Amino acid sequence: MSVWEFMDYVSASGQNRILDWYEAQELEAQVAFDQTVYALRRIRDWHGRWQIKPLTKTHAGLWQVRFKIGRAENEIKYRPVGIVTRDARVSPTGQFVLLLGCQKKLGQYSPPAAFDEALELKRDFEAGRGDLYEHF
Image (cartoon, rainbow, N blue to C red):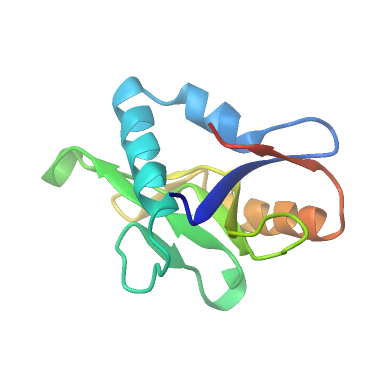
């Protein structure tokens, strides 16, 4: 049984940034992301889990889902970004709203302003702009 529901945020203009990002990834990354989301759906308390981490400081309020592909110098870390909601009007379970995706390699994020862009999407969501669709 799932205790978390994962949703895609779609902007008022119709853009689904997480789906666009997902479809641009290689199959290996898509599978790893799907497996990570599948596992997180069934874990009630994410505290101390490597696969998910809240951001802090200027990006407080955002969370990153974490998974990686490859080893050592070829390792690519993937960081889909979202927010946690627990609005009983929306879902009786916890809800994670996916906003966009990014990668981290050698300490650099791509796109570089991904977390700032995610904050803008978070503000739009909280202002009631856009829609949510179940993440497949």
